[in-house]
Image (cartoon, rainbow, N blue to C red; front, top):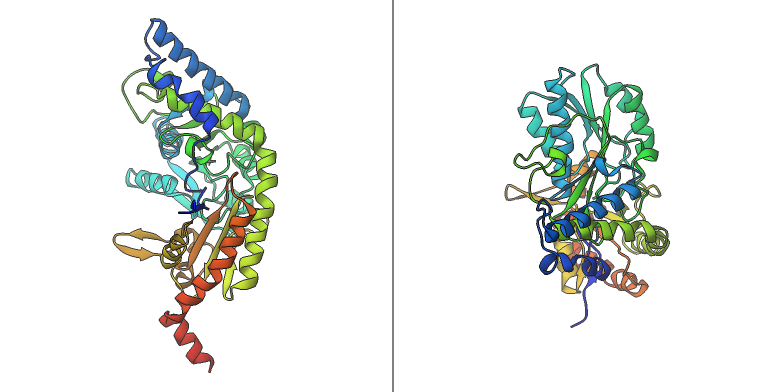
Length: 395
């Protein structure tokens, strides 16, 4: 059986062998608890400190500003809940700002805070998924304590103008968080250049292990911990540290930073070929997200008169792994909140397809997708009542 064509790198990435090699000693040989005083513990503590230093240097931060977490979702929760609750306790306000296209790790966290009495403004975006700095400026109130806007969107690949948005926040004295989970492999992560106060990452999105993430917290930003227990992570995140995972995260981030230019140069022309080929060969197809200000490995589309889940199943029969913008909610297939926020009609948003490339993606794999996808869409439309109604109306 031929190896699958994996085009779902926005969902997860394989662990780089060099990352695995760095992790292995900390499972069975240097397995000590970093809080222990004997030599095994000290070895683990040194690995933890070295990883923190590596991450800090890449982010242009200090090691004390890095908190390791169990995931990007946890990092988002810690940033948003931690800052919001600390600000309210200090009497500074209870209003947050985010966008309508955030990952559910941010949206559901904000919704949970609303149940605690916080107020949240969900900014709209334009048809390409971009947030307007002017809209952000207008949404800030005297009681606004935090703004959370993602660096790059996971569903449509649009890259937000984070430095410009962060300048708006800083001018008004409001803390700014960015979910950078989708950005690490492709975009610079210099927190000073970005101007952010908090930044979330997840290792498995850039060829590191699952189950480990981080949150950068600028020195002086007040934050309530969300996990209580020991004194780990400078009392900001209790729990014995996942040393193998943290070592893997640091190794993966170091490689992503060193190889970013080559990664972008490799992915972008393949992405452009994929976009061009699909739009030229499949009628009633539209690119979603910004046409140029998008992640270099990200191609996303909507195909009218078909459902995304059906496309995925047909692609899987050809050993092609992809994803759809639709999600199952409460047993019913609902259109993506991101696509509807872009103004795409729900019936069109149901036909979403996301293809995200990686550093091992080959040109011949792109050509294979272009060879089979038009036929898949044509076959699905042939049995689609919506397409049949359109054909009948056109006669």
